[in-house]
Length: 259
Image (tube, rainbow, N blue to C red):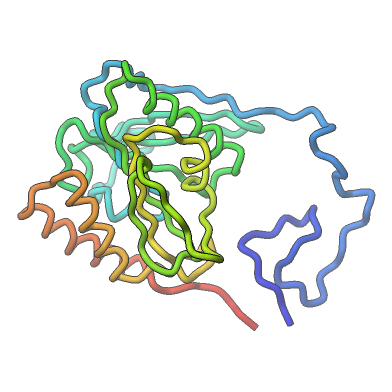
């Protein structure tokens, strides 16, 4: 029997494909990481959204869905700025620089309006980095002077039975055995703002290898169109493109070995 886990850290004893795996020596394990000197992420907002008229509504998406939101970009030189894509947040952590980008109407497939931005959070970043980013985003969303009037947070989970949509002002009860994780879980845990809405797209595959169906992508598109009151004619084209791109990306295929 082999045990499959979404990720494996060679320095920890945890489930993975454990056929003939070697157990690390006890002295190599960190008994209590909190006793060590811990470097915390340093979050910097490059773009100040306070009073920024381009930030009134937000769609926050996981990195795995970014290609169905972003227009195809023609070839460009390294480090060349792409119109319509802004570095919104940078996070320094353990010698690495992580970024959160936002897409404006200029470079987004979705027919969003000028004051709506799509913000992409790469959930492959360390969990502590995602955690800090989430807290900072919730802070700016919650501050009245920033003028954010609506935010839709989209996530995927292989532990929900069907697509879920609700507003944070309404109670949401999950079925027994259902749970969410990573970025979406952070928003649910820390948020007390009634302007945030949530959409969970179910996935049959593990976290890093999603198996979201075309039907769920279609439902997601419909909910975004409804929530943000997007142009119907333009939205039809975007939905068609989104489904084609998801198919090209192999969105319904889990590239993994089960023994």
